[in-house]
View 1: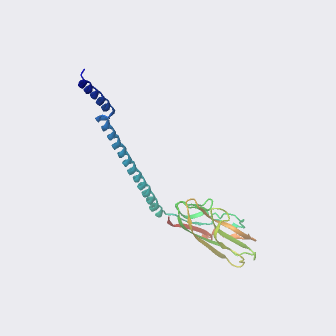
View 2: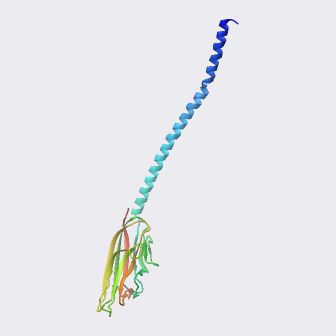
View 3: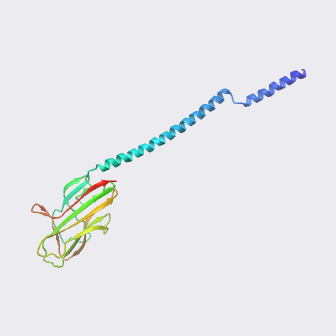
Length: 212
């Protein structure tokens, strides 16, 4: 073997080794395709995330618009009158005339907010003449727990004529908040007038002014 032939063979051998270490055209094409796929998946993932955020925002807007149109209102009478109710008693207005949305429970006398918003409540209470000059009866609009009073009216010390009182409240409630009328201070004997002679003497109402 001549020196030239040996050099050529050596060069061919080294060149072949170098070429074997380089990626083939198919491999290069495969890597480029993978990178493109990764880039496309990333782009689609970002677009999906943006779409989900938009859907969530739209759902909240729809709920808000729906809540604003909700009809929530009640008006209920006290049926039979209550004689000497005890402190802490919940007044059950058991004759509902209006109960749109069914948020008022006439079995237990409790209103439960079904949506966040601002509500109005109003109480009218009456008592007939009373022979006990020292009698007192206080009625409280109560929120969520006994003794948590927000406003009240009183029927005190009337002996020769009927007396009527009122209490009202405008409250911001969140879903699940509960409102009722509770007996507070009681002194002497007393009667809270009910529905008699086709005339309601004591009644309770409330309605949603606007949802959040």
